[in-house]
Image (tube, rainbow, N blue to C red; front, side, top):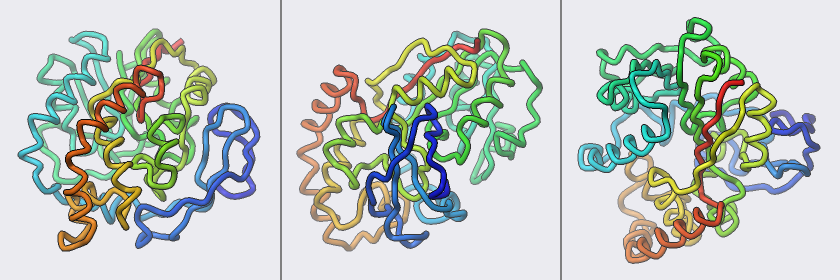
Length: 305
């Protein structure tokens, strides 16, 4: 978003200068990113032009993370929780921003007629048949989906309203949208500030609050029905990593190490290992935050009006 844009992409309120936070990957672009915040819904936006290589380089380079096979059982638990947010199978499901297609595969096994849309296919099982396209380019027939999932994608997009409008077109009347985003109003964000794991500058362009996201959904022709703050997939780890990042030189050091994007021989490794005993406390703190409606990420379930 350019600096002369003063309108909140979530609720249409007035944006004013807010903070300048360090980039999680300064090698990709500016070392610091200016943010503006909405006076009405408190959603924030990253100012300046997007970094075009941000989704193909650094932690997003097309390589398998370290320990991917060991993490498979835990990822399966995450997939089952996400599936529990959906209407039951057999439903026609489109996963927009499908990545390598893990969730598409899980949905098919659960009985859904599932396909995925992904603009940067990498190391993908060819039997999944993912469509290599952006949301705007995808050749999806109007009203051909019963449910659409958009899991940690909307915050990356330059025009979230246009993207949601396209997803609405894909859905049948009364169809379900399941949307996951980081929550700028979370306890994690308040505690850790620029070290917040889910801030992820320069990739994240809109930093939603729950009121802002729900208003955007209504503007785009959806009826928000439920907001979930207790999510296993991102929230406990996000709290722990955010707290650790207050001490490490590199934000999100362990995440970047697993993504082959940080050196193993680093003082940050010692600090990260020393912080492992704090993990149960971070899990408890995040659970309390979720119960109070301040989870690090949220899932919003909405119906197409």
